[in-house]
Image (cartoon, rainbow, N blue to C red):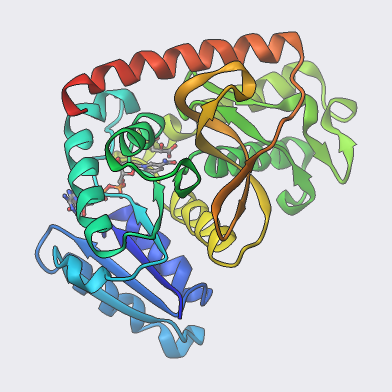
Amino acid sequence: MSKVTVVGAGNVGATCANVLVANNVADEVVLIDIKEGLAEGKTMDIMQTANLLNINTRMTGVTNDYSKTEGSDVVVITSGIPRKPGMTREELIGVNAGIVKSVTDNVLKHSPNAIIICVSNPMDTMTYLIHKTSGLPKNRIIGMGGALDSSRFKYFLSVALNANPNEVDGMVIGGHGDTTMIPLTRYATYRGIPVSELLDKATLDKVAADTMVGGATLTGLLGTSAWYAPGAASAAVVAAVLHDQKRVIPCSALVEGEYGENDICIGVPCLLGRNGIEKIVDVKLNDAEKELFAKSAAAVRNTNGALASSL
Ligand SMILES: NC(=O)c1ccc[n+]([C@@H]2O[C@H](COP(=O)([O-])OP(=O)(O)OC[C@H]3O[C@@H](n4cnc5c(N)ncnc54)[C@H](O)[C@@H]3O)[C@@H](O)[C@H]2O)c1
Ligand SMILES: O=C(O)C[C@H](O)C(=O)O
């Protein structure tokens, strides 16, 4: 029996839960929120698609009752406020740090062996907060950002190439911030062909820039931050862990010397399996990419500084 809890039944949490049950990823999904009736209502709506979509997962929605999350294998934390147009993710730290800390405490009381996937923003800093306050081993805390950023990168590449997004490969590492993401254009391919052989530099630079502000662009268009791709990316990370898929997905991980950094959580390629982050994969960076990574890490470390009162 596999069980997944999604905390936060808002845009991202409910979408993640919907993707999980629509794809029968787990035997049981619990959706929990602090707002009275919200998780119950979203659950009823999602489960009314069961006979239409051939869903076999059991799903429960609850208001703040963590006893129902008992024994979860994986917990996805999406609770917290999203940004509004014109804001950065970093501005959310004051409100979200308190929410993420209390949610993590509640989750672990009932699921002490769970693998935690942090989605709430600023995600790298919230993931670091969970490391600092939970005492969990580092393999069991995964920050979801690179899965989404890499999917956006592949989308923008596919548009530029006029190609099927499934035939494009690429990764985004570094922080999950408008200025800290590092799309690894040099390693991106279309059916194994380096994209640098197919697109000119100006186009590739625009793809990278669009990727980095992908979340801000959608926030401007939608009035709140995005949810379809974030929810699906979170569900993909859950599936990689729960089904021991051994997929390499960029995630925010605690680095201890990898990529030349220590004591921060930042996006690096992670081999994901039933033990969570089973390995940080060492992709060789050139000098320019190393410099970008060092700058990104410095910015993430700077944001972590604002956590002082929460630790
Ligand atoms: N890491 C990523 O790639 C990524 C992508 C998208 C969104 N996000 C972040 O995810 C978070 C959620 O975004 P959203 O669009 O779903 O927001 P939302 O406002 O739609 O949903 C958030 C939900 O959290 C709930 N909540 C607040 N405090 C809670 C608590 N203590 N316990 C349980 N539930 C609580 C709220 O009631 C609300 O329903 C935001 O911080 C956003 O910035 C991250
Ligand atoms: O942009 C945001 O604030 C939400 C999320 O981090 C995203 O990238 O969609």
